[in-house]
Image 1 (cartoon, rainbow, N blue to C red):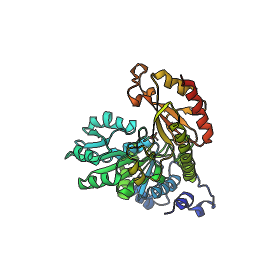
Image 2 (cartoon, protein in one colour):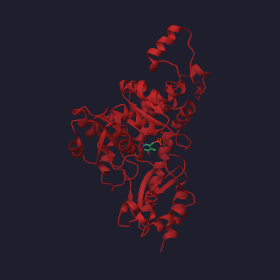
Image 3 (cartoon, rainbow, N blue to C red):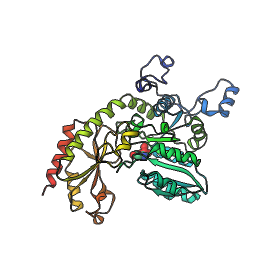
Image 4 (tube, rainbow, N blue to C red):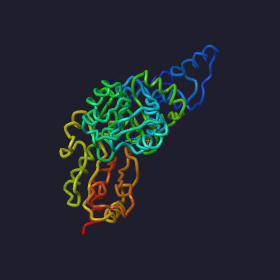
Length: 388
Ligand SMILES: *Cc1c(COP(=O)(O)O)cnc(C)c1O
């Protein structure tokens, strides 16, 4: 299906609502039935009826159909956060005694689930370097039921060869989940490589305006139905109609925003590479990136996240750099209109700083929708401030 069609028309039954261009926000908790028989049918199969908005809702339905189509998947569920999508996807596919192989560097709340919650239910995990397929084979145990991937991750951007991992998993009856937040389905569709479940934080690029928290989980119709009837309804973390409406609105401009952000990112990278105080720039589509070839093969774009390593002898220099920025905001998340930065050293105590460890000198930058010169001038001012 054509991306423009999905975003602008698909799943919008405008005849049902006055031919309005923007769909209605069906802000209702419940739906009324005309006959007992209709109600009975709904109880029997909530996944195909309007019963209660913890389950299906017409505004959410428009969004679900569009997002599944963008992912090249049969179906999808939209959650009240990316974290909820991760939780439901994993919980639905493990039982006591199972083992998960997870790539290193995945989103912090996925790790917390593996490290804090799942061990209480006797589900174990092994972290591996996912850049090599051999490491998956080596870590797979007889009780491994899940491979958890994130390609690329959101700090150092290591990739997994999605097609190869999906193939290996199928040989062992292992379910694969891939966090696709970095790319969005515009730039990478894991299900098309054979990955069972693709998820993303819609808080980032889909929402695109830093005003809504949401998550998407896509896969086969059978898997989505199973998760809907259990984890989705039980955890009660489905997206609310107004937030779904905001995401539909975000989708309208998604490709245009990604385009613009990508162009700006390259300008910022060019600037950073000629800046003497920058030791290294990490970005999957940069030729210096170790998995550059794989990135070009399985992703259509990279967009706004990049990491650079600054030359600094102490944490104070990095702090001065960040504190000097006037327009690039210091905040978590990304994918909105505004450029953002996070220094790696903010996640550890000041006295733990070790200048010989490059990860301590990393700064993650997200380039937003501002004019490129506005972002670059801000960076330039901060570099001036730390020049000796
Ligand atoms: C933000 C993020 C999530 C979690 O999404 P929320 O919408 O914040 O719950 C998951 N994975 C990645 C890679 C993220 O960046």
